[in-house]
Length: 336
Ligand SMILES: *Cc1c(COP(=O)(O)O)cnc(C)c1O
Image (tube, rainbow, N blue to C red; front, side):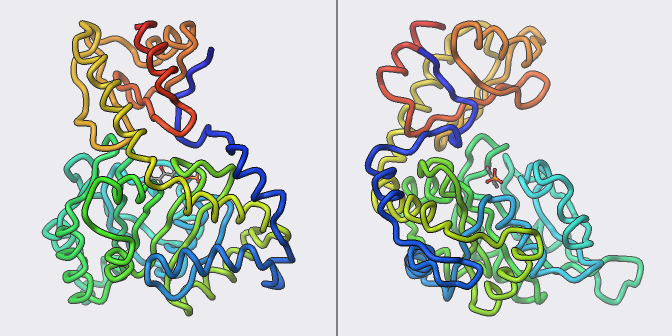
């Protein structure tokens, strides 16, 4: 038995998803005539009440396309220091958008409107790059799957409008937030210029992310996707998995959250655990006691057939997902 909690990306497609994939009607997406991709993009755009969507191979690509379309060379992007766009996208803001970044120190990755306001450069000051984009992440991975209070987004939007800034959401795990809160995808569609969502994480698809936005923004993103070598052909086989996931795998995310909470309870009385981040969704981050190195702990867990990742010198991350069942949870508990 192997328990893989390194990420929620490790899930394998379920039988019915594979069936949907094999039966997909496909075409050439560079010519924009793959009917299944068109169906997925229309479905997602309608869910969020946004004009258009673009199906891409990864969430890194959808984030980078958003940054690319919103920024001109010499722009500055405002975001939290924990943001995926800064931490885990290979410096793409500099590479793809020729822009710089202003990092804020939020509350487990969540920034406030006040922090955004203080971060906007004076456009008259020629020493400064031009602030053009605010990017937020929900749920916030490096903050331990923390969830924003939606009211903060409303306030951040007001500041952006006042200063002519665009607002992007890295919603790789947005549906994890949505099943825990009262808001709907439509509420998010009204606030953000662009939204990136991952199908390959908790939703259980083998591949795929979506960028949502206006017709114009998505048209431009489609062009830059092509330049990056992301124009794909009969990818409708993959889009079919996305349609299946949006229909069948959203509500069940709550189960992943319950199992994450249980993992937190299991760790709470262990003397080798110093603290646990508040568990708000499917991510558990523990801080090890006695100065123990996260890499050593991860290796010890691997010997017990439990996979997790170091997430800082003394921090370890576990992510629950579709393939982590109650049976595996019992096994996990027995191993600790
Ligand atoms: C996983 C993830 C992404 C995108 O990752 P890809 O592996 O490129 O699909 C973006 N943002 C966050 C917060 C993520 O967790």
